[in-house]
Image (cartoon, rainbow, N blue to C red; front, side):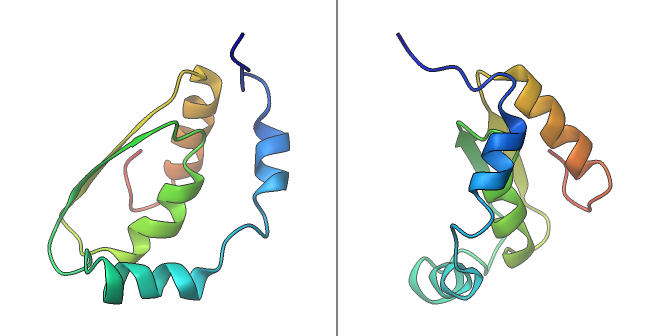
Length: 90
């Protein structure tokens, strides 16, 4: 049976605090993937509350779009709350 992430926002948020290196992600976006040069359409499946989106969207050129999908509706709702005050629609 698949594990459900419904109701696990606090656990997810706490476990992700030190799990990425912002400099390395910036290096990947600009030097390896070179996806910061033109607007992109990004779809993320299993987006949770948008943790990855919050890290990558500021590194990309403006004018693109992002769509996050997750089976845990409450995490998507939490992501919408978090992104409501940002320049990035979620």
